[in-house]
Every structure is written in structure tokens, then in C-alpha cells.
Length: 232
Image (cartoon, rainbow, N blue to C red; front, side, top):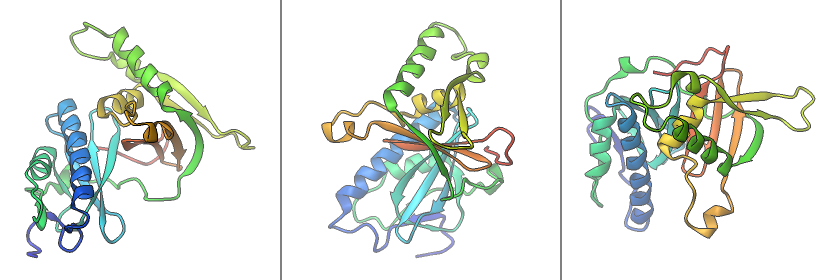
């Protein structure tokens, strides 16, 4: 493959025996990137290799959060691109294609570090319905307003998660920005299959600089107050 092409290489990774699973991954990623663009027409995507055959795709938002979803592939060339060109690459993929051409690289748009791949401490697990209800309450409170959810509500702590049985009692405040981002990206959307309903929960974990919220349909990261992390 031409290393001058800024793409996700699929050679030897997406094959006839796993193409259906790959198509499902690309479809989920396409939905996530499109939702990022709905929030911000200038949204950007950053790629990071995750093992030999997978890529984590991080999507920016205007809510001081980023959301990640995993697709098959291998990162070649640059890592930061406009979400619009990434969406086009995902939408135009055809079985047998050997790469996703992500367009023109934009490394200066995302200068900081990504969240670490590991090292997070689990704080607690909560039912995803709690997140869905909080988001529905926020939307209802701001229904009909011309500028969407009020900034005062976005900055408000909506839910506090505390470690049970932890002598240090680690606590994480989930702000309105986190709830709004999870609702906007659909990371904790209500599952439609019985199999997925068994796992309809949200796991909250932290490092010294990051808050991580894992849900069924994606993972959200946001800088922890007082930490050194930054997002676009």
C-alpha cells in the first residue's frame, strides 16, 4: 500500500469470512461520526491503533467530550482528519476494498494526547436507563428554546458516582455535558435485542486526568477537573 495515502489499511484484515462483521462496524462508526457532525459541522476524527487489526476512532464534540468506537484496520500515515471526509470514506466502502481513504490530514486540529488505552480505575457501574432519563429530562426542560440546552445546565453536575467499598471513596461528578454528549451520540441508547438488554449498563472509570464512560454503543472520554487532559 502507498504509505503516502492517509488511510485505514484493510489488507488482510477484512476478508470474505469476516466482511459482514466489518460492515456492521463501519455502519456503527458511520452513525457515530454523523452524529458528531450534527453537533459540530467542523468535527474532527483521530485514529489510534488498537492491537494488530483494530483502530479506535475518536470523534470530537463541542461539549468538551470525545467519543470512541472501534473498527477493523491498520492506521497508515496521519491520524487526524475532518469528520466529513471520514464519514464519506465509511459510507462509500465496498466489500473487497483494501483501504478507507480518510482525506486530507489535519494534525494541528488535535494537538493534545488521546486518553490512555488502559490504566483506568473503575468507580462504579450504573443502569443505562439512569443516563437516558437524565438526558430526556434535560431535553424536556429546554424544549422550544432557540439555542438548545442552556450552558448553565451543561455545566451542572447531574449525577455523582462513588466507589463502593473503596476506603478512598473515589467520586466522579457527571456533568450535563457528559449526559448531553452521551444522548447526542447515542452511546447509551436503549437496546432493541434481549441479548443486549442483559448488558444495558454504563461503567464509569477514571485516571488522574480522564473520566471514561463505557456504554453499549460507544465510549465517552472527558478531561477530569483539575487534570492535565485536553480535548479539541
